[in-house]
Length: 316
Ligand code: SF4
Ligand code: SF4
Image (cartoon, rainbow, N blue to C red):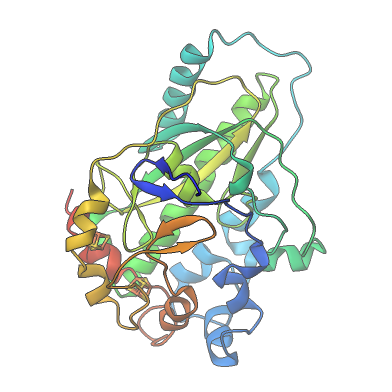
């Protein structure tokens, strides 16, 4: 019989196989596997200039996050700096992350199950690295959360809420790029991961690092902002003390609340029981249905945050 492990309130029921980034819904969308219309609307000329500068699909050089793709790694200071014991170092690193603008920060061991097996972002196609095997042997992952503006998200779905989501992605990308640079200047290897360039799965790392619990909607639900934040990660060999996953019984609440599932226009969130997906017992999102819906009304929006907006924990 397989022993069940707990990651906060999430049950791990079996072996967690690594996930291939080529199977991510964004990649599938970009390759036309969710339909030509969906791809053309998403990657084509949006009527909204905020969208065009924040998401980098058309004139990419006009987008800061596009340039941040090239800034995830860099040279090391030749000698390492003594940073104190791991507890002290973790406390200092959290202060630095806050100084750079993070709203939440937690630290966990880098479980290899949460490193993608192969590169699969559409940007990897342009770099000729699509399908390349990923090796990341860093010991730790620092997970940063950036809270989004409540009023803007409450205007979902609209280009206002799309802009807020895109702005948060850019802000969190800036934070993890600077944090990785800071650690390399202490002489330790560090790599930033953000939505335009990443090797790791943010959601299980955020749960492991104690930022929140996995909700029915698939978002990590924090005590501070509910699901209303975006994440970035720094993986590193800097010796650190780790945080523990939390169990504030949010999944128990989700068992009785299904507002996100009721709200979803395409029933992408299950209203019933959890199922086991790659060794994890969770509510499995139909990511293809979700992504296809996002661009269904391109005059008004190209993202969706209805499940986030309507989650009772958003009101924090
Ligand atoms: S983002 Fe929108 S389409 Fe996707 S699961 Fe949430 S409510 Fe449904
Ligand atoms: S809306 Fe309800 S069921 Fe969905 S994630 Fe939030 S608390 Fe859980």
